[in-house]
Image (cartoon, rainbow, N blue to C red):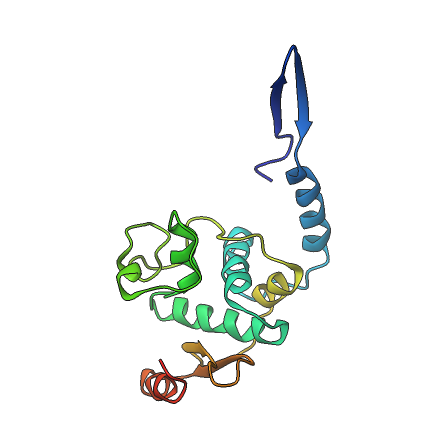
Length: 174
């Protein structure tokens, strides 16, 4: 990985201490999890699969939704539709937010997947095992859209068409 062997020198008084960061432990764990992954059926390169998994990690709240969310993004890629992943904007913005406003969708960044096509240039989070699995073996769906069920707060609602998505937006208070 990019961080293998990364060492930071910390100067403390008269001593220079070399500290291996937690990144090395994280990379070792990532390698363990990576080696446990099933066959990659996403059609993406290994690096692109990690980027996809990072988006899934940032969007999903429940493990059982992760393969479906991965399928939405792959379906969008297949038809050259923008990813339109809110988490990519949140990642790009300098201040941490929990909610995006209309003006935020215009935020100028190469990570803004409302403005730039395809996947982000790098991962936007450290994907967990379940998100990696979902990216490796996404569900086969025709879904292109999803939104959070604000009425029941128990997961995402998926749609195959913009018409269906707009109906969901109305039903779920968006």
